[in-house]
Each structure stands twice: as structure tokens, then as C-alpha cells.
Image (cartoon, rainbow, N blue to C red; front, top):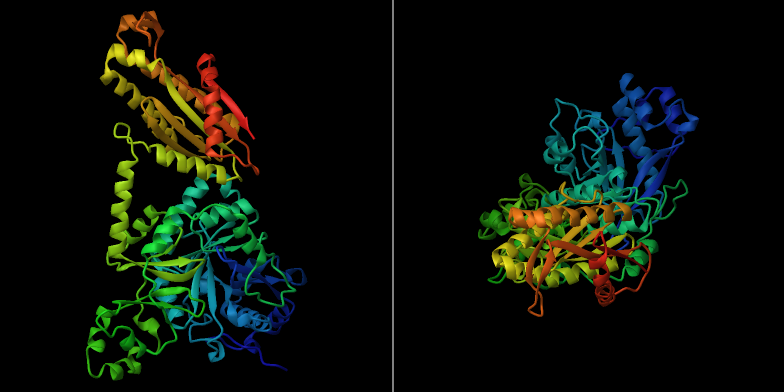
Length: 601
């Protein structure tokens, strides 16, 4: 009988009672790929237990609970992991991917837990990541950080599974600093239509990348979910859209054509952040983690040598940095090589690696800055694309980018309202038209009879009116109670004078138009405070028109043209949107509700 591989630290399966051996023998493992979102390359596969219909248990949780009650939880988990490794090694191409295995939270770091004593059978080709689910509470007397560090020293990675729906949440993320976080499918399902889910995922991505942690999204089932998660900066995806779990899995492919096709299908131009980061990052050659420590002496030698060395695994996934200043006693010593070979200092580069913030090359600059500022001692940021190392953004380069961003914002911001100006508005319209998976409402809004009001009551009152309206728009764009459409992204801009722009994406049409009508009505009420009591009572004022003739004008109000773009393919351009708005402005000013709605395409 062939001997099954046993994870280090585990007793052999023969130590289990006969009934448990019989139960485990009828279980099988299905495999589901985990894929790089921007390249389609297969990063790893998750092993998922199947066959519970042939056992007394409804699922894995029931089985492990029973094992815990009988005092054989560690032995059962070890046997299951051995079974998964055996099935995994039978797959063609397994050496090119990582194996993700679920581990019961009650065993993390505890005596008898698998994988604590080193790699399986000394095979360095086997790359294992343990998934710790949040759905079970960790032992309160167990140091999570120490336990995960023990796994890391044993050459095993750690992922937090089901993140956001379990016990520990951000506390566990902060204490454990895992290699991966898997965002639960609850937050992925419908994320393209739900602003709150996107906001949560966006914050998590920013925080995780600041700590050098990579993000896996679970349960991706639609193209719009895929693109939304990718654009938020998530690194890897898993779900039915890419590949279902399969008991018949025989080959670990290098890449998945479905994901490659999704990226080719996305015709959007690379973001400005992508372009600029590509220009300023340093393309430092990374050191493979298996490199001998003496390679560091050559890496840091020379007047023009870098002061940091990025370290990657065999899949070019960044593990962190080695800093020259931490090695001065070796680099500048005539016996440096001998000191680095000293086994008392550890056998791998991992002993010298420090964590670094990590950001995808398409990450918005604000998030890059946030990741850098989150770590007080950060030397810079490792830049990845599709989960793979591409370069290093030094602190000096980041300061230049911040300066450029501040200058651009100042140049493109209305000095009165501090709202984005024309260039930002055009960019937003372009992005909205490219995002054909969601509904968009693009609205042009301006005041009715603003010139007579401004001429009669003075520019200070005119500025007050403009600021009143801009505050309403800002409240909408920030999701405040003064008009934010729930579940939507909103953007407000100031074209100039009394001309404004508002865009809402991902919300229902009826809800958005209702809120827009409320916005217009609220401003009419707000503007009454700009008049004296007699004028408010009369409901009109006397002023000169554009021809210099005195006539009566109604109190200040706003009107607008709302262009509603339904989800689906189209070839609309910003010029086409501007033409529609121009053709309907007069109609809007003549309507009782002051709104003209145009539905496209």
C-alpha cells in the first residue's frame, strides 16, 4: 500500500480510530482555481472537501465538531491535509501553483497542528497556504501573531478566509498580518451595484496593501463583479465565472483564457495612475527568496547600488524588502560572507525580510499615499501588477507624485466652491461612458435668471447662492442625508459661474430622479433667504434684462437636464452628451419641475 504524505508535525493516519479512518476514506477533494485578475495566470487552487453524502455528517463543520468532541481534531485535520496534498500532487502542473487548505481555527498554532515543523517531505516545490476561517473563533489563550509567524517560519503562508462575516474582523487582520485576505462572497455579490459594498472593499484593499497583504475575492459570478473588484485593486479572484470546483480536476493550467478575454474586452484606457506609476517606479531586480544570503553582498556592492532589495517567491509574488542599513555589519565587514553563512542567523532570506506596503500599478494615487503613510518607517511601496512584482516606488518618487497631484488639483478646482472643474468633469464623463455595466445619470444644472439677480443684489449675494447650491451637491456626492442616492457613486463638479454638473452611477432611475427633483426644490427654498421680507412676499423682483429694460423676474431657482444612460453596450461620446444637454436646456427652464429627462441610448 502506497504511503500517504503526512503534513509535518502530524501523526500518521493509522493513529486514528477505525471508524474515523473509514469516514475519511470516502471523502474526496475538489479543486477550484484562484486566478490573477489582471493577467489570468493561475496563482493557486483551493482544496474543497466533497462526498459528505456518504458519511454521517452534513458538511465539514459537522465533521470537525465531532472530531473535536472526541478529542481527535488535530489527527483528523492532519489526515485530511495529507489526503489533499496527495490529490494535489497527482495534478499535472501542480508545481506552478499554490495549494490553499482550510484549517480549523481551533487548531491554529496549537500542539498537533499540521505544518508547524517544516515543509511536506522536504519538497520545496510544494507551496501551501492555510486558510483560517473567520466563522470560528480563535482560541482566546493562543497568540495569533506568534502562531502565524510559526507557520511562516515553516514555509507555509496564511490566508484569512470568509473575511467580514465572522468573529474577529479587523482585529484578527491587525494581529495576524497574513499573506492573503479572502473577501467573503457576501461583499462580492452585486458589488457593482452597491456603493456600500464597494466602499468597504475599497477600504479593506487599501489597508491590506499598506501591510503588504494581497486580496482574493470569492464568489465572482458576473463580468461586472469581476471588473469592479479588479478596478478596486483586488489581486486575485475565485468563483463560478472563472471555474467551478471540480472533482475531475486533472491539470493546473498556467492561465485562464476566460480572464484574459475579460481583460481584452475591457477597452478602457489605462488609468492616469497606471501611466504615471509606470514612469516613476524603479525597476529593481528582485531577489528570489531561495537565494543564498551571500548574494546580498553583491546586490548592495557599488556606489550606485540600491539601498533596498525586493524579495519575491517563485511566482514573483513580493514577500517584502531587505534593507542595506540592516546589513551594514555584514556588507562592510571583510568577513561579511562568513557571517551571512552562519546558520545561527537562519537559512533563508526570509530571516532578513521586512514587510512593505504593496499597491497595484493601477491603484489611485490617493490610495498609494494612504498605504505609504500607514507605515511610519516605510522606505517606499512595492508595486505589483496582477499580483506579481514589477518595481519599487521610493519615498522620494512618491513625494514628487504628491506634489504633482496637489498642483493639478489646485489648477482644476473652482476657487469659490472647491468643487472639481472642467477637466475633472470631462474625465468623469469619459469613465462613466466606458462603464457600460451600470446605469448612469449625468446632469447639467444651472440657475434661472442668475444675471439679473447678481446685477441687482450684488456679487456677494451671487456668491452666496453659488455656495448654497454647491453644498447641496457636495452632500450628495459624499453620500450625506441631503440627497445621496443609496447604493450609488456620485460626483459633483462646478463648470463655472452658475453652471454645475452632477453624475450618479449604479442607482435606480426612479430613486435618482426623485432625489434630483428634491435637490432643485430645496435650492429654491434655500435661495429665499437671500431676499428681504418684502421681496420674498412678492415672489419676484425688478431688474434690468439683457437688453437694459426693467422687468419683473421670479425668485432664484435652478433647472437641469438629466441624461439617463441604461446599462448595456453603446457608442456614446462626451460630445454627444453635451449636444443632448444643449438641446434640452430651454425645455428644462420652461417645465414646472425644472427638469428635462433624456434617456439614452
